[in-house]
Image (cartoon, rainbow, N blue to C red; front, side):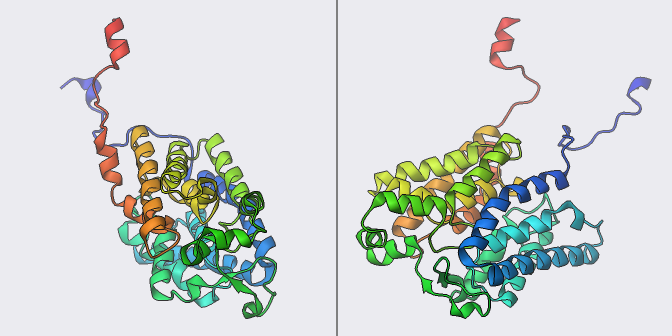
Amino acid sequence: MDENLVDLIVTSSPHIRDKAKVSLIMRGVLIALMPATIAGLYFFGVGHTLGVIIVSILSAVVAEYLSCLIFRTKATVYDLSAAVTGLLLALTLPPSSPYWMVAVGAFVAIILGKWIFGGIGSNPFNPALVGRAFLMISWPTYMTIWVKPFTQSVFPPTSAITTATPLNIIKLKGFSELLTMFDGSRLIMYKSLFLGNVAGSIGETSALLLLIGGIVLIAKKIIDWRIPAGFIGTVFILSAVFNRDPIFSILSGGLFLGAFFMATDYSSSPITVKGRLWYGISLGVLTVIFRQFGASPEGIMFSILIMNCFVPFFDKMLPRVYGHLALKRRTSI
């Protein structure tokens, strides 16, 4: 054997490493989520809403710490991934969610959504959405109580005025009934949805602030634009095909939160460039189908969780052949 090869070590992929640390990436995501988080506090009240966010983050961090002890691995609390999961879970919950339910959801997100598969980098599903799906199935009543903006008192949260979300109203009463809530003006409706002055989960109402956060993540190269572009673009086009208002469809519900912050989770999204685009398009197709034909008016959560199952397929459908030069370079030699 060549003595120059004695020190070579054969290992499995990945062989290319980046200088970016997990903590830096997670810090970037937290910063990008701040505008939408502050908007949630502004629209739904600082008191109970802030409590929901704090309980969710703290519970996720405690669950992360306990998981590290149980699975006997190095502490990962300081990489901020648990804090991101806790914040994302809180932003998908109704503002009046009881604290005990929030804590249960955070523990489920970290333990069942993340550590049962081996911890960060090994989870096939988005952990925050695993926690939300668990809560949605276990306590659907609490998960469908929506607060009208600027009506929730500090304590108790039950003094808030409840109402339906725009997607709920369309599902139950139709688009014309929804439009009457905005004085019959589509422009006023678009403006309310864009700014966030509508009922919904804590962090999903303001499309504007979520868009700003998403653009920051793309500019910092923390996420790939193909997934949110494919996701939102497909919802826009297909909604028009089904005779739904395409602008309303992309501004309402949790589409922007899901497209920029959930579907782009590193562990549960494709790694190939074309795979990411097709993954985003598939998410959009599923979401429109669920909204058009399903019992639930939303569809974002289950679209992402279902397509998480197909991520290995998207990575292999357009495989990159190693050991060969690209066509243009090969012909020029």
